Length: 235
Image 1 (cartoon, rainbow, N blue to C red):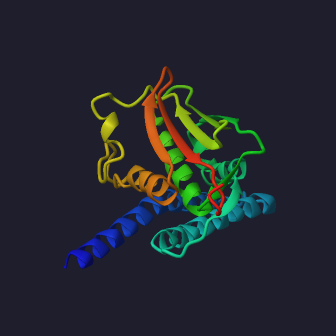
Image 2: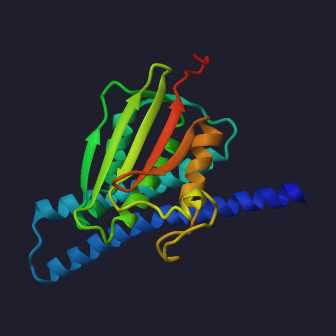
């Protein structure tokens, strides 16, 4: 009975988090469709504009499809690790949320050397990066001159760091230690389930043997992913 309850709980977490991750691309795709409909009624559509918007919808649909694969992979004990480039993962993640960044007029400062590679579960890592981007964008909704600063680095012990820092003023000290708890959220239920950061921490710490933590600084909340970079031979 305990095993069955654990299995059902894991499935529930997976379904809730898929729903959490799908809300954003679905909202963007629906907005694009609405704009296309309005422009079509007014006879204002141009081929280049239509092609661009259809490509954006395709990107978000592919992301939603990949989300299913990512979470199924997470529960697969035979999943394989691979080498991937940190900058490429961040660039791909930024492309997915590009429309929302532009809509909120969020400035992005990016500082990632080209030669930083990681060995691990690439799709799961990207899922965490997207979750942290989403969290930052939601925190910045009422911030003047919103900004996200992204920095990548590695130390002499081959630990790779990715820091995502917003300028939203930080997380209240009375709740900062609770942000990774399951179902804990300060947002409206339509904006999140409280599982995004919890699943992210579980992926980094349980699946990739790394650390995910948050601190406040003079700008706002600073989330850090730290992973000791070892290949399949443990080197």
